[in-house]
Length: 339
Image 1 (cartoon, rainbow, N blue to C red):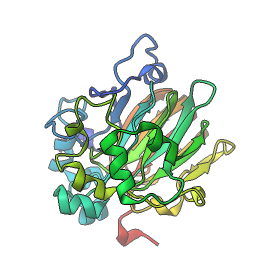
Image 2: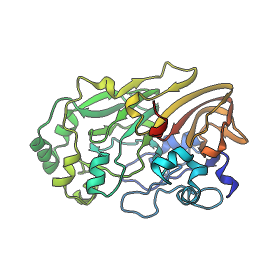
Image 3: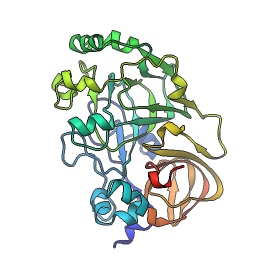
């Protein structure tokens, strides 16, 4: 077994080509403000872009793909309890996402829909941790305000009625520290100038309701299923009266470990924001660490603002020390260990 599987490892940027603009905030965070390589940085990724065999995969310093290293020694990387439930599957994808323009209205399939139509155990529930904004009115759009009939959604997509689709969504102003939980099926869009750490299930499944002006053809927006079938994954329920189930405001919490998600995220992923001044011992877990501010170390690994690292379970109770703020992202707790 390589010793790269037993300590935290810093990873470089991994920015597969996307269809929309962005990336300047990623470059600035990483300390390369002149660079603009793409709007998404897939951190510690064992997931590929939909329909592409290699794009999106993270590579370790020794040249191996992280996906292959995990497959070769899953218990070292993920822990025995995780492997018993998920196999050699990290069950997590983490991204830095910098929206240089508004993203299209889209949604993602559930586990059940993905299993039935895409031969995959994972759908794509996700969550956004806002770490920066630009512009006077940074917005996200999440869930229909009111129930929408199936035929109306079908017509909007067929006619590419952008104003109707966007106007039907809940418009929410965001600021750093805000957290948005996006269950599978819920239509959404991220506005220009919003910079996030995104946690999601490890797939690249998207059904793009608003493809005109974003995708080359409508065929790129329905996962090869055709829109008649793909739109079956859309959550058409109204969320206007229950946005508190999806949005948390944590920007005023700046001490210790801040648990960023409500319990409705537990089956999909976990995250906390660590405010460290001195040192803190972290419990053993596969994790992805994103340093937002300051500098320090995780065990022997030196960290600075913009560092991204993958932490194997076998690293044990590593000590995070220094004067820094970081987001620690983890896969779902195995059900055998849940409350």
